[in-house]
Length: 549
Image (cartoon, rainbow, N blue to C red; front, side, top):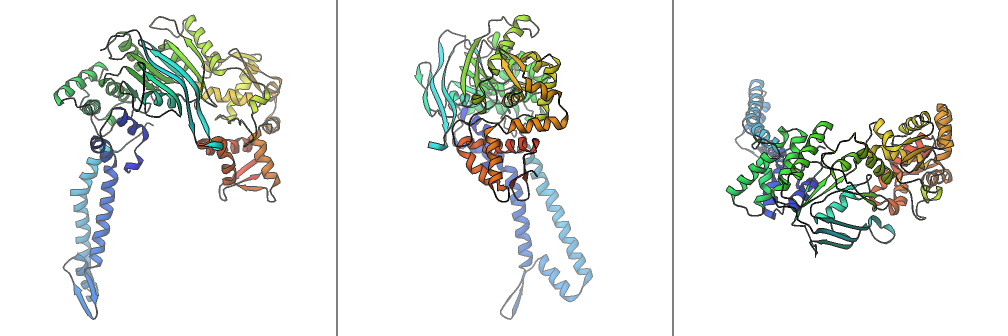
């Protein structure tokens, strides 16, 4: 590990809590690199020692020079043919290595192990507008290679609101959250906080990260105190505030524990305590429960809502990114539904249910059903669904979906007489939004499914696919997948080549202007779809795509 490999979320945490350069180096960069520095020191020391041993005997002209040391001793013994002396020298060498390893390097490495990173993965509410976004755009690249991540985002958040950003992966939720926190800059548009234009890091906001972003070499209390230390809070006051916050989130007694000694839910509680230590007016949550198991996530949601409803945390508003529809309806006052290609706001929905909310209530389920319908949208015309070929205009991304799961979904729909409620169907197969919607999208692209008003409809082609044999399904899939511009373009390119083999780099270069940083993933998905249809495949040895014979 080196300083250049520090995970981005740890860097962002240091930025959001305003650690100065020295504190950032001492608290984040040096501890993170400690293990790598020690291993490099061991290798350098070992190499240097053996080099010195080899250099203890050297010749200048006709004269030999012998320096005192085990290398010279072994050379002399070997030249004299003294096996006993050679054995004694080797044993001394091995014992020296063992002693140095056990007395110096093992303790140092054991101490440095705590730095090893294992990625896991009271202000009263007042009326008034806290945040306003006007015509926010975020683009990457330039000219013909420009990729639009966010398009014309307009959003307002007032004091006392709990707002959720909801949408599928790739719609720009986390990017928008970082623009609001000041970690990323918008390409165009304006961010206003309390009526003033925001430049740089938002001093009134902080983020709780999905992967916790704790410094594993610091204790629970030290992780919470670091945000206060960066603001120049005296040590005594830091300790008092940190201990109080740790108690508030239910971790009393774990002040001296290290993050690796805690469960996932407890680690995220530390993240909440650290975020609240700076008394943010706007608390931003980036999918804070997605890395937890079901029971831990549910418990932590309940605890957060209790703190928020009882006004026990010094926060005026909460903005949470999620892809879990039930979670959004359970917690939020208002849900902002987003879609991708490019990221944009589809609709805003108010949740006028009293807390605590019950998942089994009819009103709750009705709202969840409406949100599902908004997220899934409706099936577009065939031309709009398919898009265009690479380099010719709007190109449709292939969804990340297991194609075998599509067949299962079509069979379930066939058993439901060709129509089923999206929410009920997703709940029945126990899938999250980000797992279920790509399967639905695949079915839409192939003409097997349609989405209307929150319901899934099985088309005649979809019913024929569900009823077909394995061989029949292969043939139907191949004929339908060739309608997709990216698949047909790859297939035709391979057909036109004399050997019917084309380098992967050629396709990556051609797709780069359309997909940018997603180019590799899109080509891999196209290859998987081509393989499934037995149209073309990939040769790992030559790094080429080729037509199936």
